[in-house]
Length: 319
Length: 319
Image (spheres, rainbow over the protein chains, first blue to last red):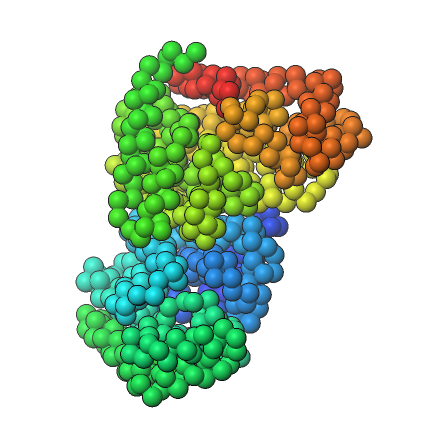
């Protein structure tokens, strides 16, 4: 499946090596959670994308390593804070930062991850200014996406379009930024910056719908977090919104059942999603969105092979 | 007292005008708390310092307005998050963000204030790169200072030296950054950057010891927050550490009393601080630190007058 990214393990190792060394000295209350996160089991998809887009426009992956580190730190900043807001106790099968330490440490650890991201980005030997501008815009989008996500928890009239708009901000812009930074680090052409940004944003959208599917249809061990936790928290997902629109009464019933017995509620919900065809449509939307993402890449010519493999990684992931 | 900063009200109005316009569109969950903070009753000391140092090295205050906005946003990012950690329910006589909305909104509003600060800094027409580097270093120092402050709550062996080290990070670096950015915005000489940074850091130290004094000796109405709230939360302050070192038993007694009856505890503590001479010594330290700050300014020649007035503002404030 990922045959064409021959050195993917090396790239991941280079990213992890950078992350582990990111914050050598400082107060223990900060260096310890940062080290904990740096040693975590994340898939490092975002920094991988940064390294791959640098290569796709003729640069070396090495030149994009600071930018890659920066996007992974930015991503983890959002995870640490989101886990507090969502009261998620685990992340990648380990206690989340607020669960392992406490909430104050998690707020502050998130803050410092963001600062470290900026510091890491500034270590780039190329194009720091353009990358910083893109980074700030991306960070703003992520905050806005998370704000919309939070506000949706209080609403029962969220449409699929609202949801996808939120996903584009919260997940799409981060992957768009990851892709963009690689090209900027490699000093690629403006047209390539634009096309990989579009590629990344669409991959982000596909990634999130895939995530919504895995949340409901995979087992908890694979996803590495409590199955159905979003369901329990009243989170909107693509599947829930579609189910609510298509079969409001049955969906209401399933959600109510989940309150007492999560397994039964999930089972009812799976039935609705299968019988209504929503599951199949969502899977089709993931495939179509990835095809659209790939269609954004012609400017790269033959060099898009690795990015196509990256898209497959997202499409075929099991967690 | 502040006769030499003849247009201080105009400067404050310019800062406030910028802050109010900082985030015109976005999700209401973010724009509303940001507007609330922008309309708040802060003294705007940090951005004032930025404008004054720009002027002190021969620039216009206008050129430093984006940098001034950025430091005030950075400052407010830290306040919003610190208020969650410290469970402070009010700020400038108004509900803090987490008290008015909720904790999730406050985490996210703090995050977006930081992003807006970066965006605002990038609007500068001059020296964006050097300012960004200083900004990131300053933000890191502030996070580290807050981490030390938190960790001190769990310790009873914090020395005055530990405390002043924490204050230099948490408060000093922010004022040093504010001062530095003004000179960078005005494209002043490197020697002036260095000297105003030192000036700002020392002013920050004096400011914090002054704050510790006001916390215990002023009345709650003037300070705009619950008198003795730090005491109740087990926060270390210059005065408490000195009292604990000098009169451990009496101080322990006063703190225990404060648990039941804050007024009585405060009264006992005031007696200790007066009779031991600690209050007088702390006041003397504030004066001496400000004198040291002023001694860092000779590179500015005659243009240091406004900065001396700024130092007086800090020395003579009542809240």
